[in-house]
Length: 268
Ligand SMILES: Nc1ncnc2c1ncn2[C@@H]1O[C@H](COP(=O)(O)OP(=O)(O)OP(=O)(O)O)[C@@H](O)[C@H]1O
Ligand SMILES: [Mg+2]
Image (tube, rainbow, N blue to C red; front, side, top):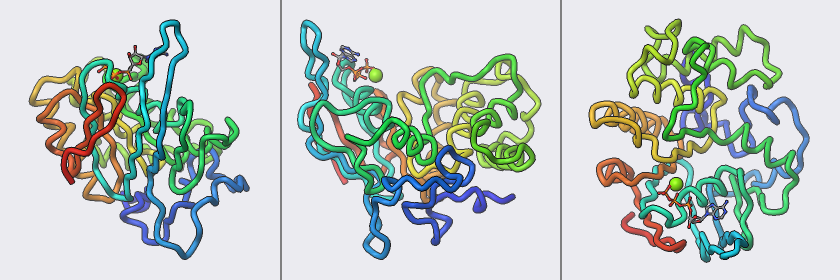
């Protein structure tokens, strides 16, 4: 299987917003009407469309973590989100990743309104369209690199042979074919994060979300991960990367800043 066959949106002209990865939850012939939210024939929907989104935590004391945030990210864009500690970055990422819901406002993912969608629709969208990368790699130490990636598609309904082929293709994509039988503890930080990226892309997501992906890495390993993000962007993947690090944020084509729950466009 080639990388193209993994089905990244930029490499598959036939793969519109409804092309949920066949290996992903919800991609096995699900008839969710919400998954058809983007009209066929019209211009491609934004991957991310946040419309006046606020998120408050009731407390006490109440915290207004996001205040009226609007953000549109088109297919193939690479956006970095910077901001001081406590400014609302992870809150924003949790909403983008359908791990949390806005208190008010709407979030459309690939044109599909998600705010009032059921948990099953949201989890199907999350599994089929979103890949996550976190600061701490969250790899299973007792399993091989290949297993760590393979396990991400465990509940996809796809036969094991095909899942393994996809996992190997994803590992090839992150340049780790020589490490498939290794355990994560024997890898460098950059290699571990690349395994996490392989796991995030194995189901061919439309959107890759990363929260401080280089936060645990030295500059060399960090550069390795940033190079990989550049390559994925080049392949047409849409990326939103949260970072404290100006060197990391400068690699994105577009930068936004969040301060005290409000979002501002830095350049475009
Ligand atoms: N579950 C929660 N309950 C109450 N308050 C919360 C919750 N999650 C976040 N907050 C508050 O919302 C604000 C934004 O938090 P968030 O985690 O989004 O910040 P951040 O920008 O990711 O910070 P950091 O850079 O330190 O990771 C903070 O004041 C935080 O205390
Ligand atoms: Mg955070």
